Image (cartoon, rainbow, N blue to C red; front, side, top):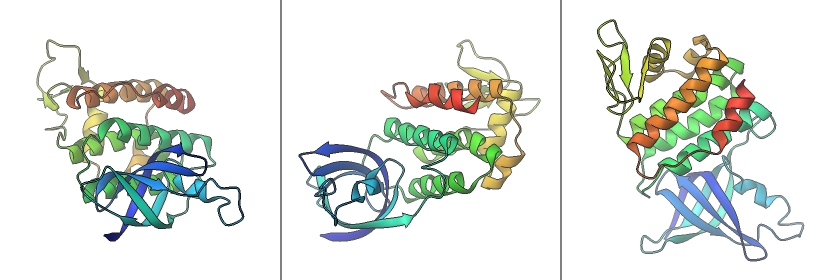
Length: 245
């Protein structure tokens, strides 16, 4: 059956001489794999079509969907949003690739989650338009809110009574835990701020030095790994830390 859906490209690999298989997070069906025929042909009609399926691309798609099959088919596709800076700006592109790899490691089931789709879509659009501070803080915001959509929203908030964020338990607590996975001081306070933010432009008002941001990125990767089975390590983390420094 043919369906119209938005999609966010997560990964694309070559298939045969002229086609690709693309992993796409869709608005209607969650994460799906699509065979896209002919996009790598060296003809006038196919020229540039492969660019539609680069990671982070935001698409409008017409797809054939069969729940009994693991590989679906794309009939038509076009941009739903055309980036101005994400694909050309080194820093923004590094942030986008980090977010995409975070999703690759986090999304284990194919079920649709429209709210998660909108979080990803909105975050990539804000990245494209945002200033330097928003761009640098967006990965931290994205992880906190991704955790919420995946079902393990950090509980509580930073205060004099609960000044420690326990990464393993996913909550703010009164005392440092026996294990090493926790944040305190400024890192716990910033985590609480990010968790409660409602609007992207508020990221412009969070001022962090590169040491704090670098440490938070590492801690947030640990946070995700503690709550998602077989999460693994992100190759883009070191690249992002270097670029943001």
